[in-house]
Each structure stands twice: as structure tokens, then as C-alpha cells.
Image: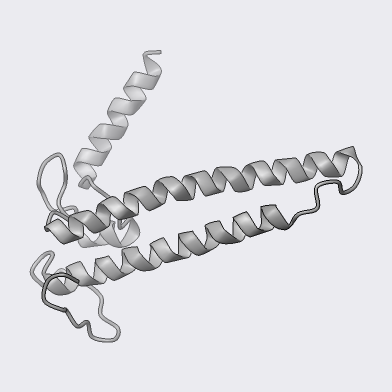
Length: 142
């Protein structure tokens, strides 16, 4: 970390009793995001290795079609991971600039429970619900 090193107790979990987004909480979420990022990178690398390691001329047409479907699913998963990695990197940037944990729309606290469930969240629950309703209305008006 570029700032003062923050030590976390072994089984530290952010608590509502603490000041919101204090240095320990920020470090906790920074580590959580970095670990998630590393897991996604490792899984993506496994996917690449699996696709490279396959023998292309295996079996009959049905088996080949099945393999192509599996490959397509793996590539879609990899694309989803790529997008997630971008969101994780953005969240890490917010940890560094001190805006992590606050709603991009309202400036209100996103909340520890929501961040535990979705560490890349950028909106508080109310703002997220408004956004989803707006998306639904746009979809329905088509």
C-alpha cells in the first residue's frame, strides 16, 4: 500500500460498530478484491490451457458439436471474468482514492453487508433499485 501499512487481526471482519470505511475496513476490502482478482486470473488461465490442450479432431459430429458448445461456454465465462476484472480494478482504485464504499449516485454509504456480498458495488441499495427499475422501463418501452 502506498499509504501507512495497515495490519489486520487474523479473523478480522468489518463491523457496524466501527467507523465506516476506516483503514482496517479499507484494507479488508482491498485484500478481498485482490484475492478475488487473483482467483479469476487463475481460472481464466486454466480455461486458456484447457482450450489449447484439446485435440481438435476428436470423435464424430455429435461429439464435435458438444465440444464446440463447451468451448463457447468457456469463452463466454472468460469474457464475463474479463469484465469482472475491470470492475475489480475500478473498485481497487476507489479503495486507493478513498471513495470506496460510497454510492456513486448519492454519496451515501453502500453498507458493509452489501459490500461483503458484492465488493464491486458502486451504488447503495436505493440507487441500485432505481437503476434496475429504469432499465426495466427502458426494456419494456421497446
